[in-house]
Each structure stands twice: as structure tokens, then as C-alpha cells.
Length: 353
Image (tube, rainbow, N blue to C red):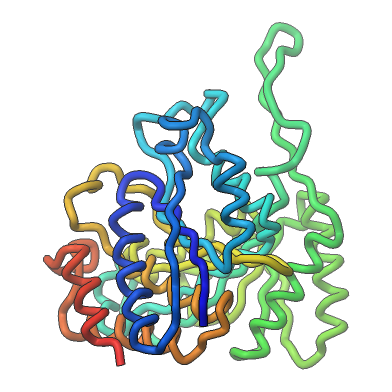
């Protein structure tokens, strides 16, 4: 197979962890007879430094023409100005919207050798395998009106949570499709006791549930879900929710795996390239030191192989190599080891079968 994979290294540790993932993908291509190319483009703070904006039209066009996109992370203290007109996060929001990436898949499956890396009790973590599906292009992050003004002499800030029925339905249907390949259980998370958007969400979730009787559907308020994700994580199979709730819950779920550096993600649309990235941020405090955990990015590359390129055998091989590397002690500091980013990546490459 011939494929173009756009690499957006981004900021902070992004260039380090994407380099590790590209190293693994290059090895996969050589081993299985594929031809992968990896054009690099700027996004986030580094794009602001060069172009004055977080994502250029040229970069966006390159992504649209590609087979898949691999992203590192964006942002850092030098661009940390939440009220500024130009911010690194704008590039991330724009690429998701422009590529139509409405479904964010974040698998959370603690490794059997790393259960003690989590602050939770081992018995809570054994057998946990959750797929969180986060709606990615609607809600508070994209709703209008948005901004600031003055009312009666006081400054006011406004964000609008907005959802259309089709936006909710398509992400729920994605969750159902994923559940069918797993344990056939979907937990739909909302705040229907307070929010009108959540009442619409629950209404549509009920309709989708009725159309798919082979899949068990639960409705759960987000506050209850946040509690149960820690107290009984094994009770979840596929958890689907709106944009902001999903953003928060998936960061909470990283505690189950022991480190944010372990968790991958895939952002998918109904067509076109998917975008793959670890769930962690740019970690500027360790950038350039060669100690960032590359596993979340490497596992994101495995999801890229599976979901965008249809290469299930190759994806499983990468995941198995990561598993063996952890078992053999190739661990960065965040998961109780002392190995560096490159050392872990090289071990994964050497363990590919």
C-alpha cells in the first residue's frame, strides 16, 4: 500500500513523540511491503511564530489531500495568552472542523504490568477496557454567539453550547458500531436534568437505542459518570458524550492507565483522512530532554493503520510490540522507568513481528 501521512509535530514534546511514531511506521512499511511518505507541516505555536496563524490554508489543504494525519501537541507558555486573538489551540479546533472529524475515539485499557502506576487500587483496574467516544465538532467549543461585552457596567463573557440533531445522531451511531465489535454496551453521558442540549442528546440517544435493540443502552448524568469512572471503571464498555464532557472525562480516565503518556486517540469523520494524536499536551517542562513517553503516540499510529489505512494486521503488530516493550522494562519516568523516548521507540521497532 502507498499512503501519504501528514505529520504535524507541533510544539513542546510533539516533535519528539511524533518522530518516535514515524520511526515505528517506517519500520512497519519496510516489514510489510508498504510505501509510506511523511510530509511535515506546522501547526500551533510554531506556526504562529512562522506564519502568524496557528494553521495555514496550505497545511490544511495538504491534510485534506492526505490519507491520514499524525499530530503531536500544540501550545506552551510562550504562546499562553487565553485572551489573545491568535492562539495555538485555534489550529487544532480548525483542523477538526475543516476535516469533519466529529468522532474522537479514546481507548482506555490499563496495561497489566502497569496497574500499580495508577493511584487507584489494583482490583479496580483489572479487566478495564473502555472506549470513550467524544463528539468533537459541536458544543461549547464551537457554538455561537461567543465573546465578551459589557452589560450595565460589568464585563460579560458568553459561550454557547449548541447541537444539531444530526451531530448527536452520527456520534451515537458511531458508538453503537464500535460497541458491536466489543461487549455491546453503550453508556450515553449527558446533563439532561439541567441543559436543553442534553435533553435533545438524551432524546436522540433513546431513539438510537430503540433502533439497535442488540446493544444495551444506559443514560448517565456526567457527574455520576465522573464518579463511576473512578469507583467502578470496569462497568463501562463504550462511553459516548458531547465535546466538553468528553474532554474532561478522558483526561480523568488517564488516571486509570497511570499516565496521560499512555493513551492514544483517533479523530474520525464520515469520509476523508482521520487525525491521530496522543491525548497529552505539549509538556513544555520536559520538552527537548528526550524523556517524553512516546507510547500514546505510537498507539495512535496503530489506530491510524487500523482506521485510515485498513491495515489491521499491522496495527495489531504495533500494539503487540508496545506490550512486549513494556513487559521487558522499556518504560519512561512517568510510568516508573528510566528509559528515554528514543530508547523506547527503538525497542518497539526491534520487537515488531
